[in-house]
Length: 100
Length: 381
Ligand code: SF4
Ligand code: SF4
Image 1 (cartoon, rainbow over the protein chains, first blue to last red):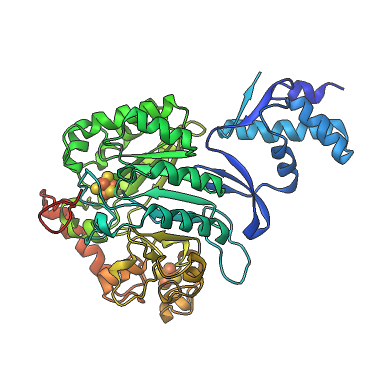
Image 2 (tube, each protein chain N blue to C red):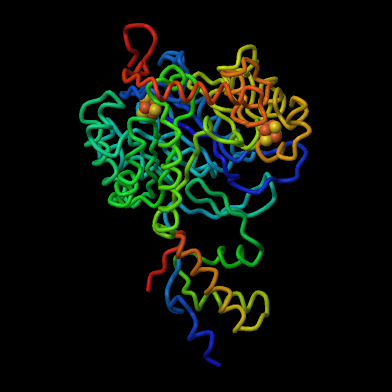
């Protein structure tokens, strides 16, 4: 099936990284992960956290997907669609940049 | 510097016994080359020899991070007047604080910006007093300020640091909102703050020269709304509404002692930057107490925390945990009682009085500013 590839908004070989001014960190005081941006504190859900932890400016989107499949033994199509949608949303907000 | 009490929650409230603060405003100094008539600093400015030393600030940043603060706002006065700013930024980054620099951009060389960038600053907010040189230079009472700010903005973007433009609007520049938006776009800013002046301290002194008319305010709100739609995904617009003409008060600081704290140049810790306008509040100082102690136990922080302190009007109102009864400093300034319902609320018996004050000021047409300055003749530098 190629549907998810066709509907993907980001290039699978592209390498995403957090834009300058955006940081992911664990917040000890509240026991949760937070994504920090100018005047914003976002609380990503557990799936988003797993994706974000792998956004390191080195792994490609494809590699991130492979990694998630290995770690959580989930089906490829679902993960690919989730990762693409989530990262595309952050790209739109200027919080993630994708180098091809 | 102009700091604005946010009206939108920066994050969902957290269910813990005592709230954990998200943000800390560090007013590193009151020294500033500009003289904005709405400056949010107190009328009694701290002088250089009263400022905390480097070591104390570094300790405070460490304590803030341990307390749960996520974002620190390095402000002033003009924070670059502190020679040790880069050292402070490096330390904030080291202890995990998201580091935001709020500057007026006058007297900041490209070399200095480079050093600030290398120290790891996450975000820079640059104030513009007007959208044109004429207005900026007049409002800040500094010739050439606008040109210098433009140069700083370009340098910030060249270094790749995310940029927010801060604009405080009032009668002399409220018509420039579309120009402020253009300016932000042309400088490559991703975010702009359009904050109506908040009337405490210097701005209260200058209310006659600052207060816009009701028509101007409502027109400004429309302009912002339209631009928000049009510039979605291009420019984030955060607006702070003017409350003199509003129906409900702002959720000042999202509740007293709930999400943020403010450290003054001399080390006093305040629940909001204007809190010192309330007489008889006992503020503790970081020279004597840890930040955690102050947050938890200082009388000033506990004075208006939660809803127990509220007058009956608010306590029985369904909005009490939405706007927290409005602003304590405004209640003090207008009602003479910090524990009163904010007169910006239409349910307050003083609401009509507040409106009348605003309308009278807007109509009187005063044009001379009482510019912000140190109160004795020799300006401390
Ligand atoms: S005088 Fe103006 S630039 Fe200086 S601290 Fe006050 S508001 Fe900011
Ligand atoms: S009565 Fe008090 S709680 Fe209710 S809207 Fe007015 S200020 Fe807010």
